[in-house]
Image (tube, rainbow, N blue to C red; front, top):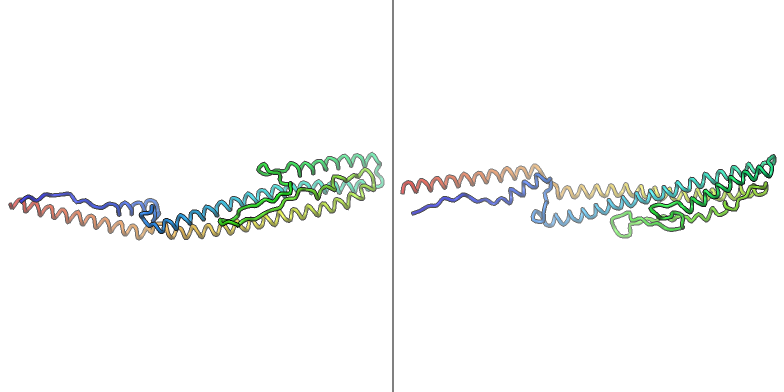
Length: 258
């Protein structure tokens, strides 16, 4: 009778799986680990990426409105200066030459205002063309906010201001005051839109954190359990090795007796 010895062959898949969970920090590293959990994790990743992109979109919206608001502030400063010059031109002690000099400064300010409305851009797009800019600020369809930009037509009256006479100076004051009110209204709209986007960014951040926490509970390694399983698996494998060694020794003894 011939008894052959053979080395034990163990299934190392469990060991490899546990080692990967420990090294990666993730309980689910492939579909083989937990197919249904992996699908849930993928959906959560997609939603989280959507939230992150929505936040970037909202920040773009804030940057755009801040650019427009800054431009309107410059227009407002120029309009305020025109008002001061108009009041000065109404002074009876000034000569016609004095008022013409003041009107020259008004003309420069009018040119500055016109260029601001004509040349202010963001990302290559003119801001004061009367357009509506929409921003996707959510992970789902329909989650958008829009801002309407003036074409600057409310400031057309400022282009007709002529303070080279006292009569013209008086008329300019009323015209300038109306334009100042329009600028304030436009800037208030931008401020409200910016506040809305800032609030949305905070809400999206909270949602992204909640998704991350939920995903972590599903995907992250429970180190206490995994290490316990790894130790148990090592003990079992060592036990199998010892048993096989004993069996091999017994076989050798039998052969020697024969």
